[in-house]
Length: 389
Image 1 (cartoon, rainbow, N blue to C red):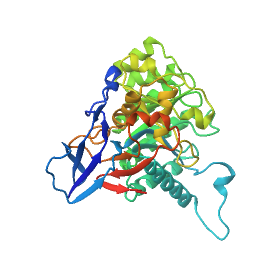
Image 2: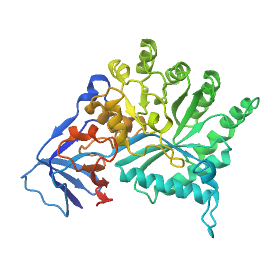
Image 3: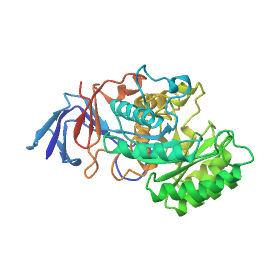
Image 4: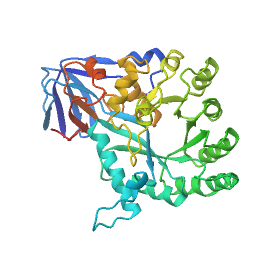
């Protein structure tokens, strides 16, 4: 089937399949007066308005701005569903197991992401209360992939369990000998994210876990906790795909150089200070050092957070010092690269999935004005319209 997206005021997109680094993050293409041509679920052409085109279906952008569907490079799904007293509350007369509650929360979160224009994401399962819970939430993610049109890649967080003290070595042995092989064998996740630093593992411990994960065919990532130095050094040593939750607002030149040599993508979380009452750093040292910066929301599908990546884009401009073009690249092409999907999503080019958002604004430069409530006219995944008003 041929689908035409017509009446586009501006089509705004980075280009390519490799992450854009440093100055290249500003190279966003803005086209006016074009029609997007989609065959089945893929983009096949961008044609000038007025060209003779025939389609089986027409989506009228009504003079809106068309951008790639956003990519969230850092989401979490906890095994406990929502936290606190709310987690145990069930409506009178209802009976819901923990597994059903987790699945419902996951689905609600995924659908919320779609409504706000996120079409791809990596979700990392976090279950410090046991591996059975970890496997349950990963299985839930796999189940929902089949019924929610959000493009997902699954990861799991390797971290000490809550309350663990002297048993840390036992936890590492179990991760290496049981958890990682099970996750790999059952194809529950493609990525192992290691919590490194305060409350997590040290470099020596983390090195052992990540080497086992690599041996099992999993992609390696680092989630920093507390000081950044160990997380950055570990990311460099093992050439981790990305490192996130970096607390340092100004990493030194050596740390930046190590990340660049390793090809590691720093994933910044501009909305995290809003959800957790933290402070903003700056993205400029990463960009100026020639790194490919990506963005994530750091939202938890069970306990909440900022689910709109557009809020993250606006805050990246207002608080982190990115230009709008850099922020768009960070939330599309570079975020897609961080989750291993930039060959399929992240830009609006022939050959990629037709995942896009139609914004109800006259000019894309208005995007940072909307910290909350950017007007979305339509979200399209694989050429199919979702959540039209």
